[in-house]
Image (cartoon, rainbow, N blue to C red; front, side, top):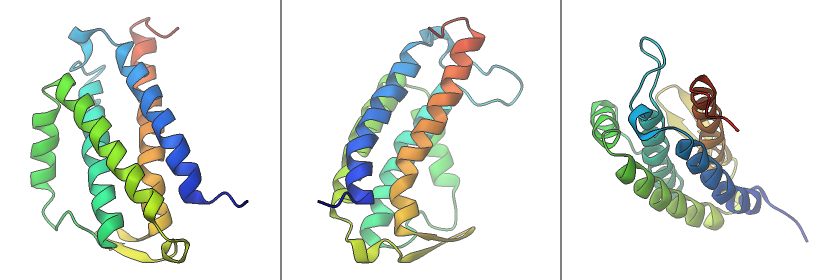
Length: 154
């Protein structure tokens, strides 16, 4: 029995979602919107990014094209608004992660090499499908670093 990239991502992405939420839960509520220095990103900003981009990844995988348009200001405004509410961030993160997992399961092997033109260059469907998994793991590390700064990392 072969194990595809889609199988791996569909199995592992829920685990990284749980790990990301666990990392967020290490942060005291009053520090979720705290920046550790200067313009460093807050926990909520990172969480909002993951929530929104998991949804846009599902959209791009379905459309096999860039779906965010050339003006990213609506995305940035939505991220800023979402980052005001931890409960809403986590709810949307769970919803959009579930949605992207469902879409990843439906990606055909023959489509993995299809190139999608992004504003910064082309990415394959395989890269787009991998993005939610990678991005949530990356931000889990960033959030755990903030937890370590606060003395909250077990």
